Length: 213
Image (cartoon, rainbow, N blue to C red; front, top):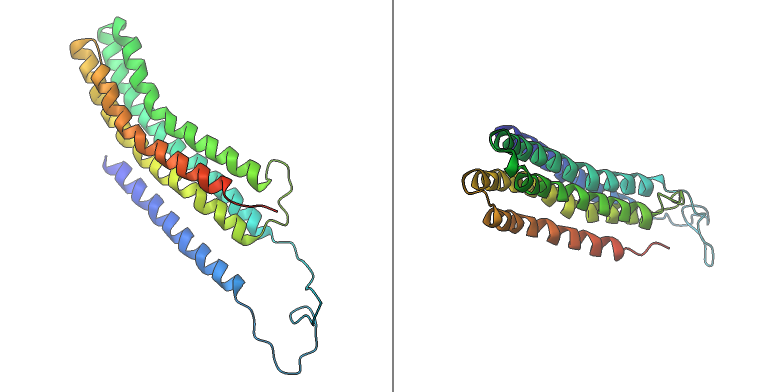
């Protein structure tokens, strides 16, 4: 528990720092440099009817790639930890009574769903940003940051909910060990799952709402 808390705090601080830096970076890019009197039209000061030449913006690609990583890695870590914890508890019960291993398997699989949710969002971002097609060279920084922000709900909620759901699943496995049926334990575990589902829906809506030209 202490190790997970330390990891979760470090991960959240890193995400918060990255979010603050990205916001400051975007604000700095959006600032328009002042023009001096008498300055001739050019790249930084186009004249009437002129448009500045368009430059490639690899920063948008970078932020979209970071969004894919956040959506996949954080829930994946939470699910890996959760499945491992539930698996250890299930193995102990199955060693004593192999007939109960089927009921225990359900509890071991439940914490794995957050990793699947993260994979879904990672694929959504990869498709909508154009990463899979390779057409991301002109993805603007603002759009890249939008994909990054869309990955945060499932990234953070998936990481935390997978761990705490695994603790509920371990308790449910204890119910199976004593009673042979863990129906109520599954209900308790699904209550934790609800918030991961809500985070999944929010991230999907955010990704779908991003308009990429």
